[in-house]
Figure 1 (cartoon, one colour):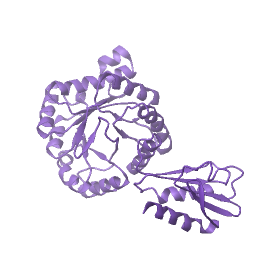
Figure 2 (cartoon, one colour):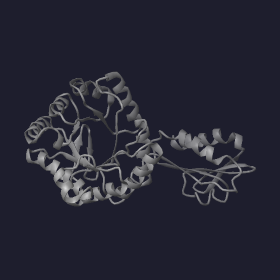
Figure 3 (cartoon, rainbow, N blue to C red):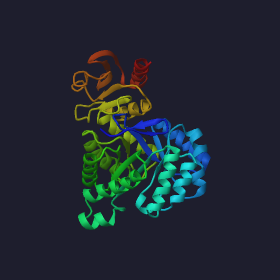
Figure 4 (cartoon, one colour):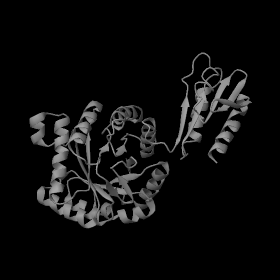
Length: 346
């Protein structure tokens, strides 16, 4: 089991709930806009939010944004150790660095001293664009060079007394990502930040992340996830929650199941399934809802659903636990079914 690491008021690792992350598309120095986006992402289910730090103004903005955000904030720093120290002093709950690109071991020690003084954790890691040259020459671009590069970075911080370390080993290749995380999980007990880097646009990116994260999470690997997408950060949160739910790891939300429909379907099942999913998207209570195309797949096949609907040419039936509650006309279904959902959730 991985060690526990505290990030603000949140703990990851050691069997704690898997935290959902995203990265802001805004500059944190634009305090008002950054805080508004953080609040919106928190409402969508974001547990941890990362901001890129490129200037002193960015580094100093964490305390103010954090007051309004309500979730832990992470400072993402590359190349300049002074910005890492400034972000730590500026109130970041965690920093993300690559020790190999901030100016040598003496600079790593200075960052380590600042981390210890503030008592905050650090994420270090590697991706296929930041492999240690020694390992790249020795092993090529594979899971060993990815894993060993990250472990070497972590060892630098451990040497100077920083033990609250989170590790990541990301690639844009799904098979390589899975192999790399399996490699480091077998060699160390750092909590793991898992995800596929540069996954792409929403559709293909969600598929790549679902395959990689599913393979890892179902084998007990991963303590916090980011579904990186070329899309609005809120879409990353929605995708992450869906992946965790599908893996049986995120139970405190509504699950909508729907049949794929076929020639037996005589009503607009697909459109109603979308409406139902939208209606319950912010529900934070475990409930299973079924939208079925016909009575063949209705109360029987979806008997384990808390609530469900099945349609036919003469109208629709609303059922619970496999038992029919009422029959309604299709044009009355939305009001009747959503009313049953509200009653169930109250």
